[in-house]
Length: 124
Image (cartoon, rainbow, N blue to C red; front, side):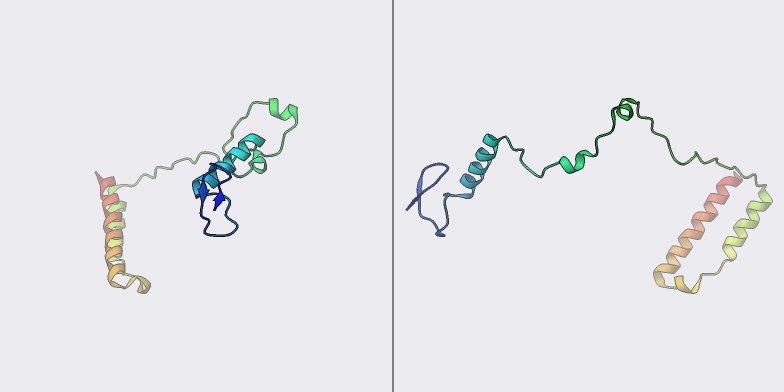
């Protein structure tokens, strides 16, 4: 019989090196020990704190600048004849060989219908 280092109960160890009666006692003992030492639990975060900046840089207000300028939307002006020509061109397109499968044909048909609907909405 051995005595648990955490709770003091007598226990029958399954391994000769056992010093705690259960996992709960082992965990509790570990936490007590590290709490007394003042150590933080878990992985040290000093790596993630980042480098310390000089005071003149730290004092400046942070300004976030978008590296890309905003895109300007171009609204093309189509008359109805151009849109009708585009719709007929889409309907006359033939399926490419790499998409000529059962699922590929379904997706091709779906894509064409979607493009035609978008153009028909411009007509209205």
